[in-house]
Image (cartoon, rainbow, N blue to C red; front, top):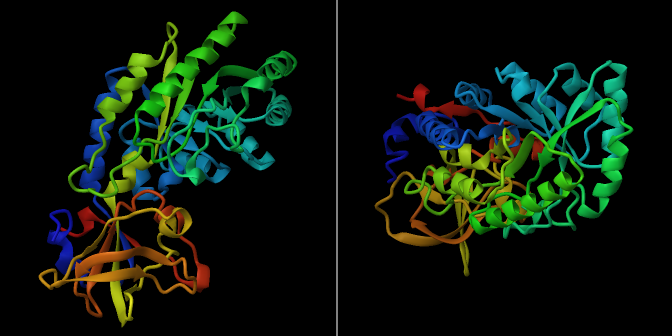
Length: 388
């Protein structure tokens, strides 16, 4: 039994499964480490709401003084509602709607991360209607590989995100005509679940090239947003519960050529919240087959879609009857889809109907991506401070 969850088993037995469980003490420790390591270099942190928009989690994060990275108008509104300061909110996204742009303008956010000429023109028009200037950072496509899953790679020319280098000259000329746009910076984001820090070194070197290009045109920008995407250890969530923020930030300190007075911004999500969350489920049935045994849970892809969508790995632990002899299982959910599978050929203690199962590291892209498919009810979240 894991030290992370063993003290909670008796409380878990009396809670209707499935449910999300958040270790708020671990989240607090993670936030303290993040703040300590980022403050060494005066880096600015924006938490990426798309990783987890649970209100209690957001309220704790904003207490540490971090900003918010949003990718929809509703995320901007949720950030404001949970206490994030408007001038610490950045708004990214390749397809911002008219209503979303107006919401962000009215609330005077820190910056729009813009991804096309047409988007710049639309923001300029709406800002003019409000007699204001819109602060904008250009999201540039550095064509740097993140060495991660193709669905969460965002920095290559084949991806839909960002402005390509060959468009820059045209955009700089167009910006001279957009009187209600204030260009304040550059924005980059190469992907997610990045564990090879050399990808960030490559990003830094590419950013330096972009900076030089702008300086040659006498454009010095006060703001660099280098994105996020730092990965976690899904295989050992207890041993490596908090990622090495120090090593991560040191790469940017060592290789990014920062101009005097320039602020460096990060957008971190998964690395902040993933390991504080677990999806707790119950075994409904054990279905024995010739080639495999199916462990059928009451949680499914409606509660955690990452394995079905990305073939992502999450550590699966049995919390009850752990002394039983190991047996091989395909751990699946009840959804009417063959892709509703959390893991194949896993060796777990022999399991029975009613056993409790924990699917780890679901604090990021778990609850926030849940759905009502098959008309299932959204499940509840519980917090460590509630289960003392």
